[in-house]
Amino acid sequence: MIGTPLERFNAYAMPIPESGCWLWTGPISHKGYGRFTVDGRKVQAHRFSYKQFVGPVPDETTIDHLCRVRCFVNPDHLRQLSNRDNILIGVGPTAINAKKVQCSNGHIYTKDTTIERPEGGRGCRICKSKYNKNYRIAHGAEV
Image (cartoon, rainbow, N blue to C red; front, side):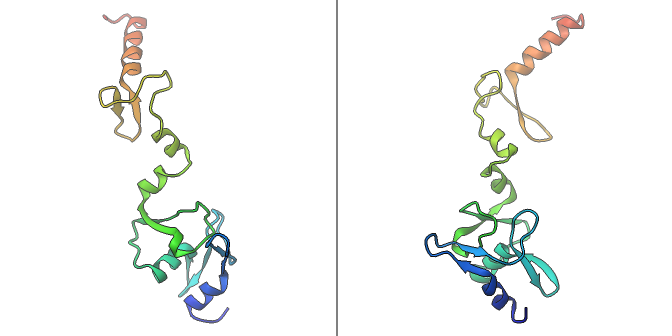
């Protein structure tokens, strides 16, 4: 397809009147994002849309789809987020665990009962203490 990148983008962006979303009708990546080529480089259509119609996008910034549909490209339905924030508002395991308010044994996560792990994540100080006590008993250490 010949034309400027914006003309080619517009040829693939199909507005959906009922929702205001723009469906990407061009190539889709294996992760479900629209993509096309600009100056010999593959680009994500939603990032291109945001840059064209809203403004610059720092490399470390993620463009989030407010409607949660990866192949939509309306810049009014996109926003910039840090990668961390984008993951935490999602539906993956990291987001699910971050939303938990208690450990698997029912202890409420508070400042005093939560262990922040150096590699990321958190643990329950009450469960860890109980585990350590049982371990010392089982291995003949003083309690």
